[in-house]
Image (tube, rainbow, N blue to C red; front, side, top):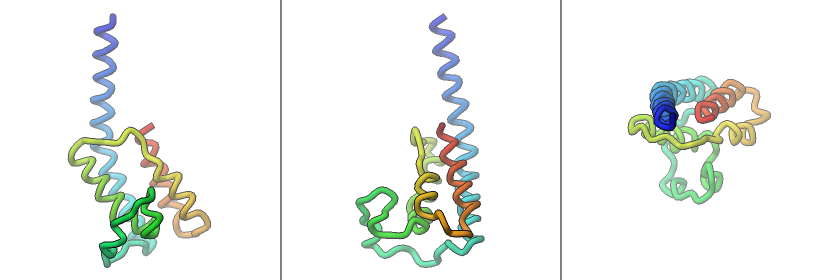
Length: 120
């Protein structure tokens, strides 16, 4: 009985990992495409000092959309490539705090909330 339960548990973890390997890069691409569509994609990289952030979401050195582009999306893609995923994500909640009131960001906020849901 215990062996069957453990086997089922490990099989479910493998299934979740496989699903994340497919869905996480897809969401990264969707988030990037939406940022480009609404004009929040930058051609210029952040200044070196902006990468020396100490606060969550780099709120002390850059705008949230810069963090999405230059920190979040590269890390998401690295996680997918290495199959090393975090246990949770709260980027959608932060997006609501940072982008609420911007009429152009509804779809972006939705995509980030859906990304968070992948880890529930």
